[in-house]
Amino acid sequence: MRTPVLETARLFLRRPTRSDLGTVFARLKAGDRHVASAALAGEGALAQAVMIACHWDLSGTGLFAVLPKGSDAPIGLTGPWKATGWAQPELGFLFHDTPDADTLAPEALRCARGYSEAVIGWREITTLVRSEDRRAAALLRASGAIADPFGDAPEGALSFCHPVRSSDRRRAA
Image: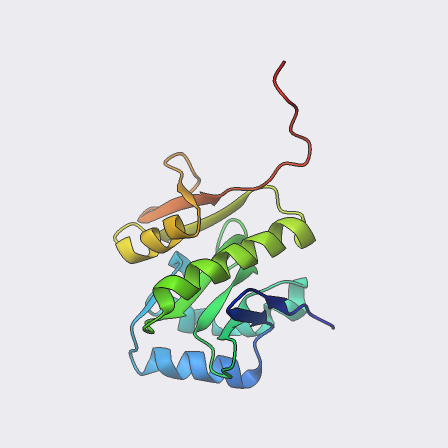
């Protein structure tokens, strides 16, 4: 299956290789700090390891490895996926706490959101974060997402919705 490679001014987003996943999971097991959507926060990412690795094969979409240009080391994962046990698909993310994560992560999220909208055709794009995770909420706001107090979120989670351009907007008369 051929999967896309997305590019921004400073990043490449591509399907994760075995090595990418090994690097991400090794850093998580070592206790490296990271910021993530609810399903990938804390031990959640390790619990979702099989789904992360197989999502592209099962559904044709999944989390992209996020690599700064000129580097082979992923700084994290982001993309459209549906976590095991989750009610709906979301734009998920997991970024390691690197010196430039606060600027590169929003760029990666915007790129993955654009892919979800333009290629997959998502018209509603959400992300759930743990309610106490202020850094994840700040990252989503930096990417342009808006807190949705009425979103369908499980207990202990906050829902954010990402702006989507509507192709059928009509001008008000």
